[in-house]
Image 1 (cartoon, rainbow, N blue to C red):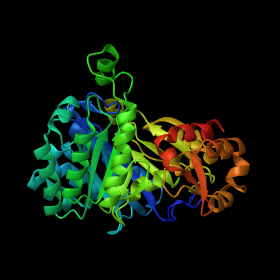
Image 2: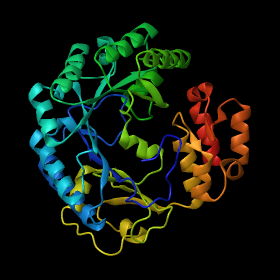
Image 3: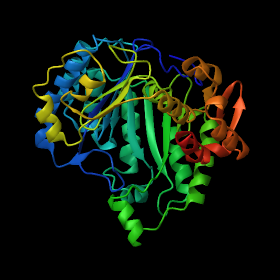
Length: 414
């Protein structure tokens, strides 16, 4: 895999391996801020869903001629809500359908409430070597406001238990910029994650997504609106505290100890190929079959019942190209990626990394440098203090990390 700041767009799929995302849409309850393709109360679908998911994994493995995987990521939803036997079955299916080296990163997202000692051991035995625990806060009042089912003590015990079960790579998710959140409680949450010895920390600012209960509560005035200035203060505080504890920021929302960066998420940010299976999962493939060097993006249908009905008897067939992918059983959306779109997406995703986008790599991929491809956005963002050249790469400045979307949108509009 490339060093930070390099983009590998246009490299063959087999170079460095494929990133595989596995979507698990089940939740015990849906959080009021969540707009992901997740569902509560559909547990009776679990057996048929797992069978359909295994079928899709098998068919893609055959269609892609059993490629090597660089990473596997079970996300959702709540993957840890699945019975351990189903997690075991799915990982065994992946090992059969794909070449999964022992060195590959295999991540499972988990809710603290699912992290009993027995379940953690079962997750580890299934083959997961990295766990991402959705803590969100170590403050009980904040957890209640977010509709989380665990408390701070449960979250801490989950992190300790993961280490005890043999997970050498433990990641914790936290949220900031919450209604009524104080800087002091945010600092305590960050410090508690550090005390628990987390290898990786993701810190996400709350986004009030339209159609979610929390967005409605804020819009109607029953919940205070988050303060963006306080959110910025919390972000800057996290940068300082985490750096002091040896967790280096490598992406806008992510910090890690050396060698513990998320291999899977780096595939997204570096424009490497990835395959998503399960309802609503997105994929980006290129340089394989009849796909050209800019490839195709596609997404599966969202409703789990529709997905199950379509995939149950699917047989992958024909040459791998945009038309056959569009006609695949689970596909809902599909379209080729143009050279211009690939350039814009390379910038939008690569600029999220602290190292930015290397001009030499961009030139190798697209035949021209960044400033030539995007003269207006590059000059504007530098003039605004959002971007800077450093070591041959265009990257966000310290101020730019707070206003990243201002820079990204200019390259997308391009």
